[in-house]
Picture 1 (cartoon, rainbow, N blue to C red):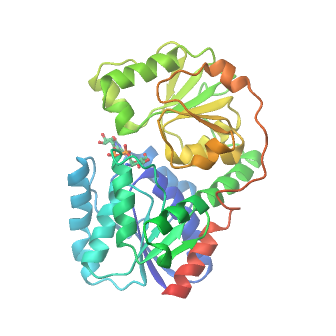
Picture 2: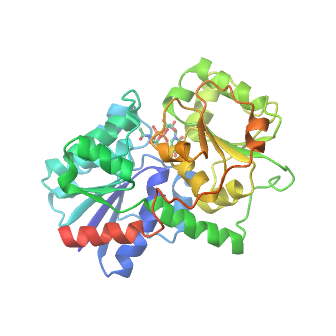
Length: 353
Ligand code: UD1
């Protein structure tokens, strides 16, 4: 089988790592196209190095653009490469502008399209990611589904026939990485060890960063936390804070550059809890047994909320010290699979190719 993966943003490199290992182990040919949506070394190259991924066969270097221009640049940039490509599957991942741009290019070139992490919904169409998901799922010939809830969403949208529940490939990598950091500590930034205990925080969603009032509210909230906060600064947060003249290193907050995946897993495992608006981190916190507060009104990963490990706090109301001192009930439930999702996904691609 010949699979062409199109990736461009941080969470996609992590998913790619899980899929690449299985494709190679099963003797398949794997071509990697990087759109260039994320380009800072700590947002891109570090993941290729950490997971021994080969350099991409092609990089479109689309860079930072508006949403429309980014989607357009990816789909136009793939037009030529896709005209003479031979592939069993064009594989796209998750919900980014790169995902939708690549899906459009694949269908325009009449190539078979598979979507990994299909069926995930926040039911908030104001999020760019939600539209990317809905449209990509509609166009895909094969839907590789992470959870029962995502499968039910696709059934409700009339897409059951091409949908296969395989589990979440992020689980594969998260569990592997947990074992790895428990035996081999990654090198952490200077100052890391001296600041105990701590909360890990990340903020990057458009709704939380592009609105100056909202961003000020979030930074003020974190700065008042009785537990020190280690804020891992995504480039969008860095740029917006600069634009709105908001000092991120204030009160309880200490900022750090974005981390490698192994550093992040280590940081979370040793934290009192996580405050985030990221999708992937909510799940990783659950898998690592770390309590999570999500600064959004809704979540795609409702299982984490139902099982008591994640609380939605869109208006920054929770008392973080009280919240993170609660002892949560351990659970054996595995809504995101048991760590074999990439293998199951590749098996489905083999059968359907
Ligand atoms: C994207 C995805 C989101 C995913 C996130 C992970 C979309 C719509 N959203 O959001 O689903 O959770 O990636 O990080 O695709 N920038 C840099 N250097 C970089 C990358 C970005 O400086 O390496 C800056 C640029 O100013 C850019 C901004 O960050 O304009 C936002 O980046 P963008 O690619 O639009 O999306 P993310 O917010 O990262």
